[in-house]
Structures are given as structure tokens and as C-alpha cells.
Amino acid sequence: MADELDPRLEARLREALRAEADALPFTVSEQDLFRERDRRRHRRLALPASLLAAAAVVTLLVVVGAMLRAAPDEVAASLAPSPSASPRPLATYDDLARILDESLVVPWTVVAQGEGPAAGAGGGKITTVLGTVGVHHFIDFALDCTGGDIEIRVMSGDTAGFGYKSACGPNPIMITDGMGSADPDSRVEVVATTDVRWRVIVEASAPASGEPTVAPSLPPVPALGFDSTLRGKLAGPAGPGDVITLDAPVAPGSTIAIAFACAGGGMVHLTVDGVAEEAACVASNIMEFAPGGGDRSVVTISANQDVLLDLEFRSYTPAQKGEFTPPVATLSNGSGTTTGVKACGGGLTLPGGQGQWDDCSPRWLAIPEARALHVPINGTIVATLPDGWTITDVTATYVPNADTLQSPTDADGTLLGWSAGGGPTGFTIPAPPSGDWAVRAVISGKAGDGTLISFPYIFRVVVGP
Amino acid sequence: MTVEALRGHRPEVLADLLERFGREIQGVAFLILRDRSAAEDVLVDTLLTALDRGDTLRDPAALRPWLLRIAANRALSVRRSDARIVQLHVVPDRPTRQTDADERLTLLGVVDLLAPRMRAAVVLRYYADLSVRDVAETLGTSENTVKTQLREALVQMRTSLGETSMTREAIHG
Image (tube, rainbow over all chains, first blue to last red; front, top):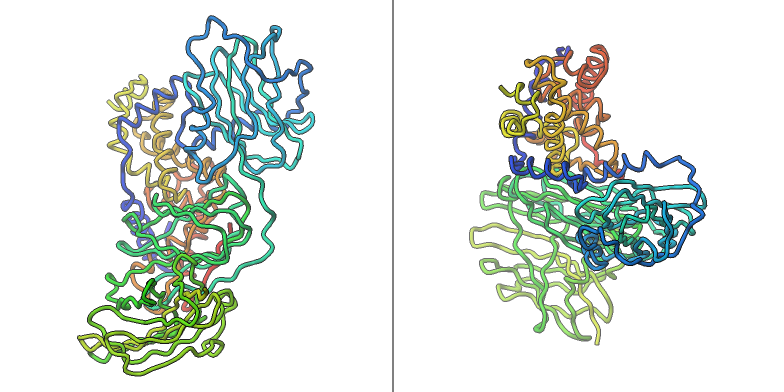
């Protein structure tokens, strides 16, 4: 099989695929294999997370579509005296809750729980209604049982939705219902014979506060020095349990900046190569991560309810590309300090005369509140560059921080002040009036080696009593 | 020795399989799934499945394609049940400065966008170096179908590499 138009393409593809796979760490050991083999032999179902989901799908396929009648012998859940044949005690509710909590990025709440067999239950197979779970995207079960087979199912009327059926194992297990239900009266049932002892808890997220109503728009993080970019809107995560995985090529040694605007409320949880950050789902956030190494990064995004994300992901590799690293600009007021985010529209002249101009747009960035500098009314603020730099010129304008998502132009800002010859000690300007502002300070400076810059830095300044 | 041990379901063969084929199986799974942990799961699952079903391996020379077949099918199965993996396709800010690394990313980006079975065909042919016939057998399809899939994939790659201006690409959850 040869490519007719470019015989080299196949070779380049081979090289790319091999480089990609070879960069992957190889960490599976012989012990891992034997451990997993032992688990399977003991029917624990404690599969790795991604296979657990697959196992759940297989299980539910057995049950989906079956029209099941609720058994007439439904009883309330309460524990009967322990059968003397019980080989071990069941996990407590707290133990079961811990199993579930370990898998969650945001807290869920117990929506149903129960144990059996019920006191006074007759022989044969008993159906126990644990409770109503209502509309849900995902719910998790933690189950411990001994003595035989058990079935857990989510019922909507007489129709079975999600179902799980298996023999009891030696350890508690976690099961996820990923089918969801739009039925506000959906309920969880446990079916087992009276010689099976069991205990189950069911967890779900707190109710969502409504569907997102706005489509956020996000200005980019600074372009100069960033060598790769992705932007896009993510319709999700769709509620609790839905984890979006972004698999991103990144340059080794790079810094990752993730900016996102979010609608829908709740909490958003991001991880980059296992390092986690959590943020409120608000209009804008910017996070920076150091990737775990290699030339790929795995980013996971989850939320405790439906959200809509406008995401920008950038990999920043100044050292490898020989790019210039902008100096960190600082804004302070005597009692607090914040650093600026370098925005689009700056210029750079290197000692040899080589220059770069970063003519990108929009010119403003939304800065998270955590980076805000709080300034009293009628106070002053001081812009500085690090040691080794001399400020030669500063021009500062400001707009309401909330307006930054509307992508104002340079001209839309209100002039705060300007000065030439600020010198190494910084440049002092009056603070804006009372309010929550984004301040765009275009700082021109000179380094000891002759490098000249004129970079815009965005600061968030909150002025109030 | 390995095949005999497999047919006898002797667990000590796992170490040998892991050493000889582990990296390649993980690579095939990763290139199909683009998820490290899922690829490791597939590797473990593939070797344990091979141990369970070793007595069905007739031709000792077919051990490697047999293992890759299990791995590819496991990976495709996992992929079908997990539709929420989103590939980031990084768009260079300076498209005119096309480097080898950029080209590699472009090629991999095209592979990411292929339909799962077409991607599996590309991975088995160009990463695992299976013959077209073995790829067809692995995926349970005809040689002509595999040839068509590979040709289509190459055309898409050539088109992407030939683009002079790159646009920012939206990702869809």
C-alpha cells in the first residue's frame, strides 16, 4: 500500500506515531498483572476505573429493555437480625460513603440508603425500595453484600433503567449508573433473597440551579511567546460524573495556561497530569499549570452540575523556542501587591535590533478575583518591573472588569494616567474611582542588556472603602 | 515456550508477554484511545485475556498479531463506551513556521479526527506494521476496505499538511 502522491508521507506518519507512543511512560508491571488476575479470580469487579465503566455498560445491556414488574413483596428497608452463617460483617455506611467520595471531585450527597434482609421478611426473593432518586445524570452506588446474588436497579414506573446484577464478592464495590433518568419519580430497588445480607448507599449531586443561559465569550490569554493555542466551546460537562478528558500535545518543559469562561454556576474542577485545581463556575478564570512531563498532557474537566465552558488552552515554551520572556509587572498600593497578565498588543526590540510585535486582539483580559488588588478610595497604585529593568513610560487605562468579556478596544478604556521617565522605582498613578476594574497599563521599559519592551499588562483593581 | 505456556494457561507467561509485547500493545491502545490510563487498562486486559484464551491460539507465529487483535478490539470497545474524551488539536500561533514538530502534531491531529475503526487501521498498519491482510483480519473486515481507509487517511493528512493558513478549531464536547 503506497501513497500515490507522496511516497514519503507514510514514512512520516510512521515516525510520528512511533514518537508519540514511545514518549508514553511504561509503568505496568508484572505485579500489576497478577494483582488484577487475582481480583478477577475472586470476582471482586474492582477493575481499573475506565474498565469499570465498560463493565457497567455491559451489565446494563443485560437489563436495559427488559420490562420488569415491581415485585409485590416490596418492603421498607430495615435490617433483620444477622444470619448466623454470615462470614464477615458488612461495611458500615461510613465505609461505603468513603468509597464513593474517593472517586468524586466535588461532594455528592446520599440520596438513598438501606440494608437487608428486612426484619420479618419471608423466604424467597425480596424487592426492597431504597428510595426515590428523581431526575439525574449520574448516580453512584456503594454496595457490600454476602451470601449470594444481588440485583440493583433504577426503576421508572414498571420499567427498569439502569441495572446491576452479580454475585456478592469479598469486598464492597462501587457501581455507576450512567444512563440517567428524566423521571422525577425514578427509584432505586434492591432485589435479593433473604439469605443475602446487604448494605447500599446511593449518592448523587446537589440539584442543579438551572441550565446555562448565556454563551460566554473569552478573550485570549497573552499571545506573545505562546506557541500553540486551542480555543473552543464545550457544551459540558453535563452534570456530575461527566468528566471531559482533553488529551493535548504540549512541548516538553512548557507551561500550560488555561483560561475559561463558564456559565451555569456550581464548581468546575480541572486537573492537568493529575494536579488539581477547583474554581467556581463564573464568568472568567485563568489557571496556570506545569505539565507532568513528556509531550502530552491530559486535562480533565468536571463540574458538579451542567455548565457551559468557553475554553482556551495554551502551551507556553519560551525557553525551548528561544523566545523572550516578558518581565513580570507588579501593581501595588502599600498594603497589597498583584502581578499583571501580559496582554496582546505589545512590542519587543532585542539588543541586536531584532523586533517582534504582537498585534493580536482583543486587548483586554478578564482577571480572576483572586488576583485582584484591593485599593481604598482615593488611593494610589504603583506599577513596577523587576530588578534589572527601568520603566521609561507608562500609560494606564481602565474599563469595568465585567466589560472585558465584551472585548473592548484600546480606545474604549478611560485614561487613568501616563508618564514618561518613571525610573526604576516604578510609576505612581491615582487609583480609579470606586468599582471593580480592569486596568491596562502599557509599560515601556529597558533592560540592562539593552532590550526594549512596550508591553500591556492587565491588572484587576477593586476600589472600595 | 511462550505459546506452550499460554496454551497451558500458565500464569508465569504474563511476565514474558509483558516484556516482549507490552510496550507495543500499550502503544496501539494509546494511539486508538489517546488516554494513558485507559491504554494501561487495555494492556492489562489484553494480557489476562490472552492467558485465559491461550488454548485458542493455533499458529505460534501468529502470537503477536493475535495479541494486537485483542488489544485493538478492546480499545475500540472502551472507546465506544466512553464518548467524552475530547482531543485537543493545538493550533500553532505562527503557522508559517512549520517545523518537524508542527508537522508531527498535524499528522497526529488528523489521526485523532479519523473514525475509530479507520484510526485503528492506521495505527495497526503504520505503528504496528501489520500487513494489510493482518489489519483486515484484526478488524474483521476486507483487505479492500482497509486499503480504502488507509488511502482516505493519507489524503486527509496530505490536505492538512498542505494548508497554508490554519484556522482556530473549535472542539465539540
